[in-house]
Length: 445
Image 1: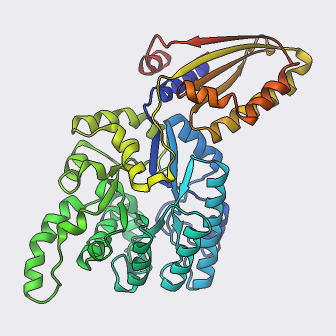
Image 2: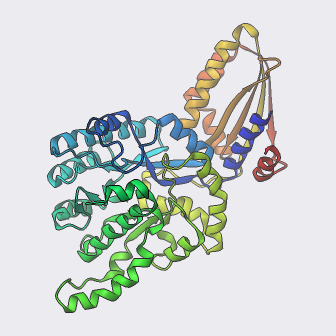
Image 3: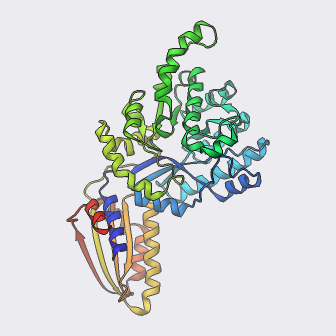
């Protein structure tokens, strides 16, 4: 009973979200990537193990967290092993698998393509192929690829091409060049160096005026802006001195910074949000989970507190969780407004000799509906332990239109027609929740 109440509470919580979230910071870690990394002994290159990942587990997390769409990127380390052709092959395989996942689950996954840097020529070839052939939604760039930092003039041809495509660029920290391995074995990269790494890469882009020279790039900075809110005042103060002495070229720091976007993956504390708002505007702040590097239950538990924290700083949670990312990525993310939720319970009695066959149909329609219909928020089948022939299906739809569209789909019609002779009785009950999900969760602890 406790398990059933927990599931119902989760679905009720999801059903109350005005528009489902868009997660711009998540990672896909397929076996092909892991095999390549392990073959070169790089699985601990970032100072901690690469977490397990599967599409099914990722979708389960998304459903439980109320995330409609996740933007997938390759994790660290960068798969370059001294051979540009080999790196290009690993990135191509990753991008093809990401494109296949996007096609298999429409509306659930987008992806930003991995590029085989530091080989700029091959990176440009892969960017063109990924955007034109595979339907990539942008590219992911490491802060540095074996010493080649973002902002390096070597990358200008790539930036010029991406600018011509008005590309979204997801940046992510990697192991800094010439890192002290003894130090990072004691203090994990993610706790400090990743923040410093993102900051140094973005400042290098600003120092080379990249974001002004290529104004159509849409660059996302991870982890609440990293150390940029702290570093920018010092950088702006030093710039005139360095320019006067001939060590730097004059650049418009504010113009560069104004073009950046920021995700909230990591510790989005009150202080972090307040500081982030000193360097950007609310429309440039996006939700990010960092899945699977953060435990799903921790992410789900933090959602409500983050929503309240955003509101306390004058930010609209709806914008941060959904609208800003939808505007950033344009029509590539199928987001829509929903009306009043529909929550209903189906009570079904199945003929004993047909039970196994019926459950196959029920599981299939649930999986396909959740994977392909954003308006279907939950379809969860349960059996009575005392009488397994009694089946209950909790149904949660975004609104009446979503429900009506669902019952017209081929997979629903297959279920309805295929099970007609298996069902002894059927009772449908439309419901109205009497308690909130928060109270429900408190009751089952």
